[in-house]
Image (cartoon, rainbow, N blue to C red):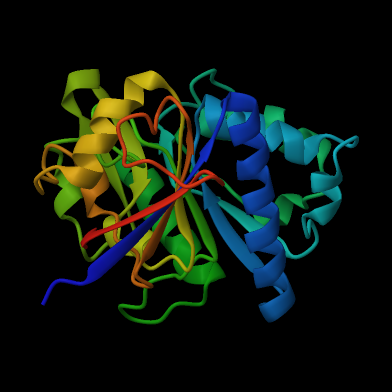
Length: 265
């Protein structure tokens, strides 16, 4: 019987407020996990919206920075473009410039995807990195404490693009995925890894995302066209942090900007 998925969404008035809410979410979940287990592991995505949150976490004048357990968490990536780490399209470069160059996170705790390598080699090396750092055995799947996702205007998330081979991968932890309409290769965590995360959230902003978000959450199930529908955390709760524009076609929120709905996972 399909699992019921509870989707909880929190709507901020504008991009600035959304970045602050996202940064606070990073701090709260990461600090709680580190306090409970002595070490937290989080996986992040690229994009302009997370960039603003990372800049807040790196700002010495912001109290959020002091709340991050910099000595007790490891940073991973959800996906990466197949480019060198200093390329302007690199998710790693964006994160380094926005946050890593300015915070006391030890290099040994930064686990980047090696986009400069051949795609299959990069994916295999990242899978080995996950298996080694999480000390996995056999068919075990890593359980990240926090996974941050975005959603593209085509309904993709991570580098799980519509009608691509990675949508059907269930045995690998990370794969190379060719995106035909971009004529490009990406490295991505697979659906089972993302759905195993203890806390999984989407960070989505902009009016251009409103219609596709409505289709993903409220429309017929069609994950080949809308890969974001594949995201159904094992814990049964999916969190969305949205700005007012992205949430404009969803059911109305309460006075605190909170809304919830359910669908089959």
